[in-house]
Image 1 (cartoon, one colour):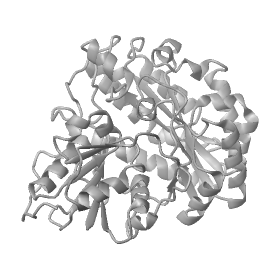
Image 2 (spheres, one colour; image 1 turned 90 degrees about the vertical axis):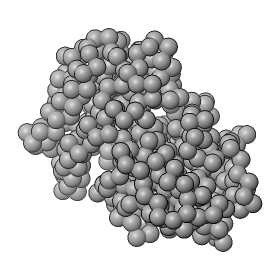
Image 3 (tube, rainbow, N blue to C red; image 1 turned 30 degrees about the vertical axis):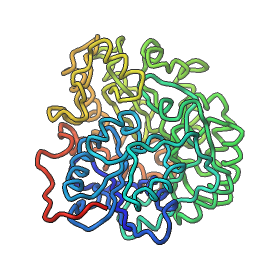
Image 4 (cartoon, helix red, strand yellow; image 1 turned 120 degrees about the horizontal axis):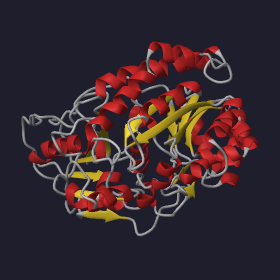
Length: 447
């Protein structure tokens, strides 16, 4: 039996900054050695739909759904069964089953062996879902599946799953519920060693769901002498000693969701805790005094937002010398409370924006109260452009605590900004998926 793993892109195009999709290394580790595997990442290479295989398995995000369905349809026209997993099929399994033979809801670890047995016997079920959240102990990704592929040099490692918060625009809580799990620290350390990377990105949605365990992880990281980055909730800045420990263990950058400078907008997003204990300025100082570079993200389109908020967020980000910043339209995605609210209020601009051929990357998907949808689209794009001007890049580089702390930091800073500036213009206003069907030269018999 042969399985072809596919990571679809938003459209048929390549990227020079793609990072290893960790989920496929996990699936590879769960696949018996006697099963032949192939892997294609459309961000790096075309997907060869005419290559012989017995089963196609792909992970689907909302932004890649249209393209994933196009690829899946091409394989199924050949008679090759397709299984889909990930956030999007978990929340919209019926939609996924219009283009796939089977859908995995939630984590795959508890059902993958069962699915493979059914595939070998020619009897795939429509839906696979583990009755309980699988333990993460013993989970060791097999990165041999990435051999020969030109990914960014940063290695991806997962410590835990789930988040203690339930922000209205986020679907993490809908996917994991209140279940919060972490891998044993010693296994994470071994995973990092096996990756062979000197710069690691810890992919957890929130690494601080258990502070005591996080401290144990940071202590264990110190002897490795690596550099690492992560996503964090800003509330950890209440504990400067904890942030200092992060820095001592090798953390050089953190992505922080500021989302808005408006307290009312934060409350609307159920993220008022961002400024509950201290101001943004105070929290930022804790990270930067520890030497940690900040990647700040913002969203616009809440009921209290106006067109004046774009420039305010850009000025704030430049003043604080963020290494990177992103400015996005508030986007309802399936599974998130925001999607249900916008749907009930009749404020969605598309029934399913991820499938609508008229939707373009960067477009507003809802009708905001304080501006038009067109102003929301334009305001976010203008904010990205202003933050990424040459003058802004040079000004932000001057922070000696963080961005220019060392030649290594400065190199990372300049490379990250070069890529960010390029991607702004490459992605904006591009349609998702492709307008043409994938060609299929021959037909295979079903498994």
